[in-house]
Image (tube, rainbow, N blue to C red; front, top):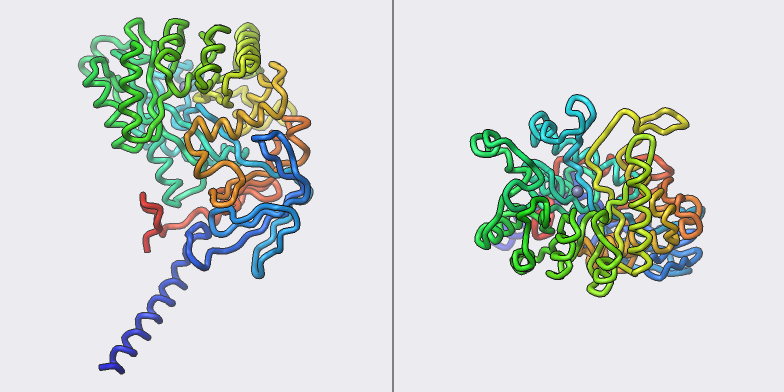
Amino acid sequence: MTRWFTALCLLCVALVVSLSAQTPAPASASSPAAPITVIKAGRLIDPETGTAALNQVIVIEGERFKAIGANLPIPAGAEVIDLSKYTVLPGLVDAHTHMGMTYKEQPENNYYYLTYITDSTPLRAIQAASNGMQLLNSGFTVVRDVGNNALYVDVALRQAIEQGWLPGPTVIPSGPMIGSTGGQFWPTPEMYKQHNIMFPEYIDANSSDEIVRAVRENMLFGARTIKLCIDCKPWGYSVDDIKLAMREAATGGCKVEGHVQTAAGAQRAIDAGIYIIAHGTALTPEHHRQMAEKGIYLAGTDTPFTPYRGTEAAYKRAIDSLRDAWEKKVPLTYSTDFDYWNERMKDPKTGRWLTRGELTIAFLQTWKAAGIPPADTLRAMTINGYKAADIVAERGPIKPGLFADLIAVPGDPLADVDALRTVAFVMKNGMVYKRDGVMTPADFFHPGPVRMPNGRWTR
Ligand SMILES: [Zn+2]
């Protein structure tokens, strides 16, 4: 009996050893044998204080930071990555974008009703996966993706990245935008009544019951934030409607962002104490004053005037508005509202198409034109972004215990924020995605194991 038991145990051990040899856990799987990586950082920026420390050692165990400091001992067997020529800083955040929507001049004349008809949900999911990798390549490790994502493309992308199918930023998905009848569409009666064109691009929710149902459905299907059309129609949401959505969202741990396009809508969102206001165009200096007082985040979507987008007049308004919000001390985030493409989106020097990441970082132009100091721009792109995404307790800052996301750039972004345009190194969850300016995503691609919602990896 004892001999049989011993033999059985040996067989089990052999089986486990051989199985684990065949299916190695990804570097990010946390286990006692999690690999140790050490980064030697020439300069390490703390965006919270706007300061930098020289010659820091960052110890990473598995997918999390373990220790950060000068002259830390390097553990035996650690992989050492030498970034002593670089400035290391936390990953960047686009606090308002749309990875699963690309409207174009041809064939749809920038009319996204047509994009919605020509591009299926699966196609848009693949666009979103590609956009996510392009954003990660430019140092964006967190993205709030807030609506216009067909049938929960944003949620699927979050899950695919989280489960380990492919590399990409941490996605904070909203699911479809919730609005009163019509959302941002002005459909014909035929398209509205006979073809149900609103869903899944928008969820019509008018009464209190419908608002509660819509918020619950989005959370059920995986939303991590809730997006409301406050004033997309003259029959937009009241202060009470917004408060109701916020209460309901809180039951599922979600904060609420309001799309705002009128001064009256902005005031209702502020009066309700909403978490984030998207789009700065309708905001007055008085709105900024109230937002600062209440600590309401601004995702201003501050589009620069470039050869491929914008007008000089709109650009001037965006600069003035961003400048005023900064002067009033509104908690600012970096945001783009990117969801379009045209053939003029080329590097003027080389003629090469710009990537989604390069197009996103190009919004720095507005921040520089508004005279925002680099330290404050950096804070908007990092700390404020993590807080607006409501993830600051688990990832973002380079602190022991948090997920190991970081980037490195040549130069010093605290002196010249344009240094962020050239990201040479990207780490996400302790895995290297870009090294010496070249993407190295191979380690992220594997057919399993899959990370489950409880954070464990399947075996
Ligand atoms: Zn948007």
